[in-house]
Amino acid sequence: MTLYELIEELQALRARTHAYERKYGVTSHDFYGLYQQGLLDDEGVEQTTEFARWASAYEMQMEREAEFKHQSHAFVVDLKHSSAAPAIRLKPNPQLVDA
View 1: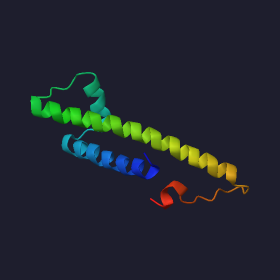
View 2: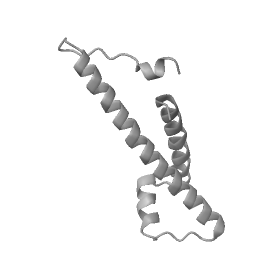
View 3: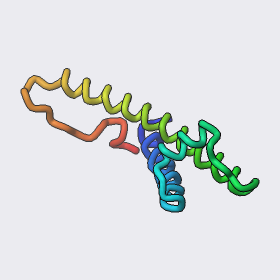
View 4: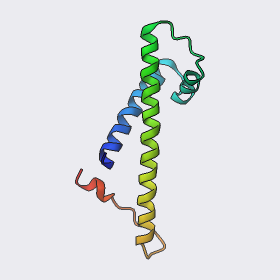
């Protein structure tokens, strides 16, 4: 997965989890804790499916965020090492220029 694809997928996942947050009025983090503990009364198949989709989207979001943080940190480290000046000149990531 390219950096561009990673960022695009992360944004789509954030939009999905945000829609559930708007619907239920709780953060995905709080929902996921309840879901993992088996504390949610899912009121039947339809809500069970919706909760499973929300949990899945949140898990994927957390994975993509971790990968994005890793790649971002690596880029910042490279910028620091390539800069002789005390101030770092932030420039577009070359992986994204042609995306």
